[in-house]
Every structure is written in structure tokens, then in C-alpha cells.
Length: 152
Image 1 (cartoon, helix red, strand yellow):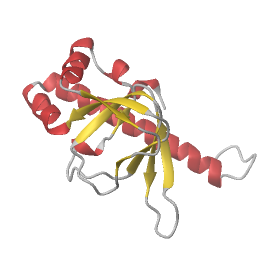
Image 2 (cartoon, rainbow, N blue to C red):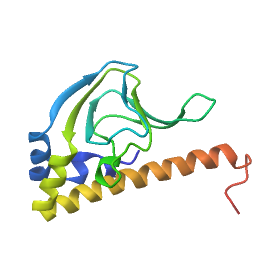
Image 3 (cartoon, rainbow, N blue to C red):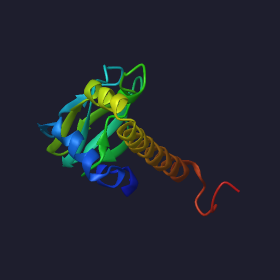
Image 4 (cartoon, rainbow, N blue to C red):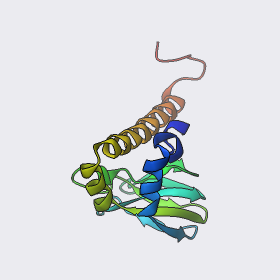
């Protein structure tokens, strides 16, 4: 995951402080399901320590792992845009400490402070772009013949 998607590089110190001020510290034991695909996306997390895996339900099979997230990364992007439902699931792979932030509060803050809104939207967009790029790289690893050097 690119460093551009981390909270410290995406926000100015005043914006970071405002977000942390409304956050609460939470912990998840290894193996804890943090959210399920299709559930209500009403919060997000900033991972402090530990590893979380993002996965998608695959009918008749185990859930497919999409990405692993760690220190200072954003967990949960679906809260920002309607229908505000999780598009995948998340599970703590190791014990996790995180800041949990209420999405409605952040949406109201962004509405009243457009500069914060732009910073938050940019942060989420960079996190999504990084995850898309990582998924593309994994697909190329899976489906590109060895030694092909690319798609040609």
C-alpha cells in the first residue's frame, strides 16, 4: 500500500487533530469480524497497530482476500458515498488497535469545513486508488504468463 493513503501524509496537522479528537480508541482480537459485506457503513477506522484483511464473499467458497491493511491506514471507505453499505468484509488477522470515527460526524464536519471535506475525500480516493492498483498487480501476477513482460 502506498504511503499516500496514510492519514499522516493525507492531512494537515489541524485536520488530523480534528479527526482524532472525535475518534475513540478500540481494539479487536485476532479473528474478530469488524464488518460484513452489505452491512451499514456508519464509521471508519484508522489502524494504529495490527493487520486487517479485506475480503469478499464468494458463493460456495471461502471469502476471497482482497487486501491487507496495517499501521496508519484507512479501514472502511464505503461510509463516504451512498448507499453507505460495506462493499466487502474486514477481519482482524492479528490483534488490532485503531481509532474508530463516526461517519455522520465527519460528513457534517466536512460540510461545514470545505477544506476538510476536500482533504477527507482526497484521502479516501487515494486509499481506493492504491487498493485498485494493488488488485490490478495481483491479477497480473495471477493471469499473465511467466516471462511475458506485460500485456503486450
